[in-house]
Length: 201
Ligand code: MLT
Image (tube, rainbow, N blue to C red; front, side, top):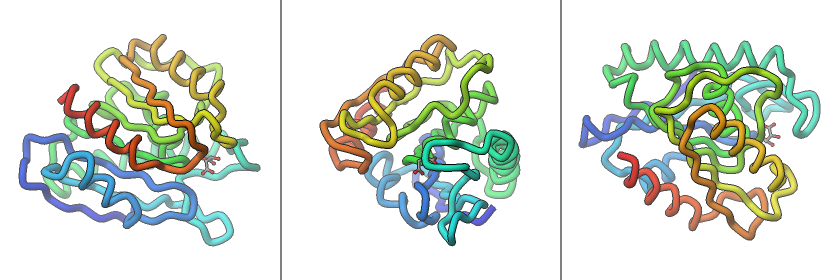
């Protein structure tokens, strides 16, 4: 997968894996990594799917309606890519923290739903429930931060709460940070995510 890898100054700090939103690129979230954990190594990935020229991590049939078959295929593709990237770049695969926004949060969420050791922790900005009706792996060692907007028209508060419940039921220690805003990624939720990560590192 197309990506950027930047080695950090602290090789014991969590490796941040960045997943952009629809229409983004692997450049987009680099400032977020800097704000959240400036000494970390960073792997920033570009989604392999194009929707009208806009990169994404998996296909959708309509806004909020995912192509489940493609989602499962792309989730494995990212999982395999992370394993290969850890070998190629020489980082600790067991110390990876996902940071995703919107479609990027949804692919990161899907990795959590399908694989027990996908990430050491995950920061999901404005995620949705990636799949319903499947058993989740044991996530008791995988804390999750959810940044949600009370007026988010894409990820409703009810859906954010449903995701919190599903992850908690799988054993994850979930922290939901609420903003009064909509779908946009706000500075204050990024700061909240940075504080949260310090608390779990
Ligand atoms: C998705 O397709 O993953 C969600 O609708 C969020 C987005 O618009 O990218």
